[in-house]
Amino acid sequence: MYEDHQYVYCSANDNDPAEYRGEVCWDIFNVDEKIDGVFWIDDKLVEDLLYNVCVKAINNFSKSEKNKDVYFVCLYFDDQNFNNLIYIVTEADFQKVKEIYKGNYAYTSGKLERLRYSEGDFSYDELNKYDELMCEISNGYSAIFGGQGFDYKPKRNIGFVNTFDRNSISIGINVIKKLVENSGFNVLNKTEDFAAFINGEDVSMEDKALTCSYTVSNKKLVRKIVYYE
Image (tube, rainbow, N blue to C red; front, side):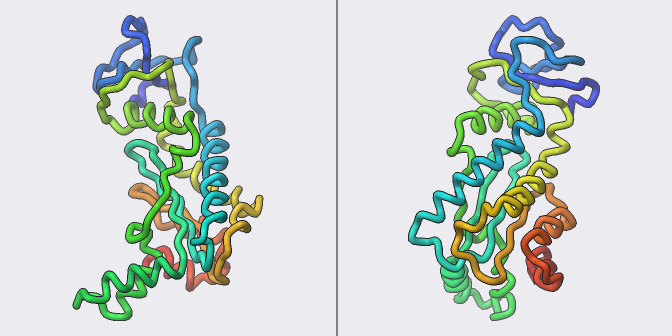
């Protein structure tokens, strides 16, 4: 979207003179260079912010009674609105999921085991709630890149470098790598086969496997996680 311009932004000013694309409820403008009066979002800012909110979410979980036998953490990318989620899943959570599906005749014991890394069957934490700026970025991302209309006006002009939409998965990969390098998962009571990875509708199997490799050296386990085998 908007590939003919380098920058794109949402305006809080109804009389903004830039080139207008009124495709959603927010007023969206395209420009070929950064202009004054716009809060510009780039990959580095979002990567640092996403890392910080992940640390907050993980530390928050670590202080709860649930912090026992954590076997995977998944950073899930919602590419429609950048409302990213984090799944922190324990062995106890998996047992509950198996009990739910056990009564379904279609789920043999083997198929039940395939649910072990199916993050969609577990509860999650919304990362946006940990930072007001992350919410603002999410709303701007939704309006511009997600093509979604909102009955909402931004508090200020907010814009993105146009490559941000295509780089969002790389940001997630870097965040997982940084969490590993900075021992961000060490506050969790982890199992020996603990894994951390990214997932999402537009996340490739290769990217998911890459992030798995930061915490898992066993290639067979990586394949099990990536392909739900």
